[in-house]
Length: 121
Image (cartoon, rainbow, N blue to C red; front, side, top):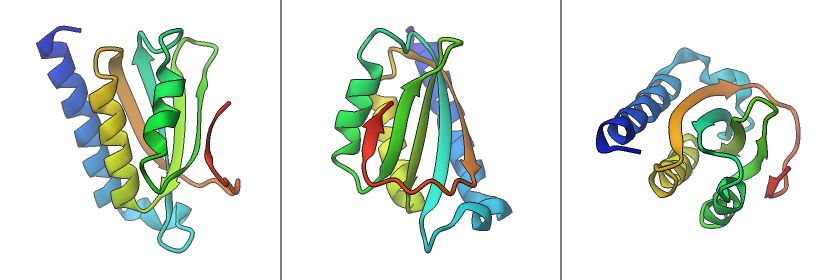
């Protein structure tokens, strides 16, 4: 990915994180002080070790959830933790996998599933 596209991708993710973290909807998926975020990554994200790398990165952060391939060629990542923890985790994913990521679309979601670890699905 060229520098212009990578910078745009990083700006898009940071803007989305800022909007979600600053939005008034953050109470809908809180469990204590934990929130659940869903990110859809597009680009060259399947068949390049994206999920394994993401799981490896997740081990360094106090987050739980999953990462999985989608039939349309995107990758879905669901992460639960404090806003700060998830933000740092997503920034690390973005930094490490920037060459593969063309776009990242993030949202805060309500999800009742109880995660114990961060897994590949």
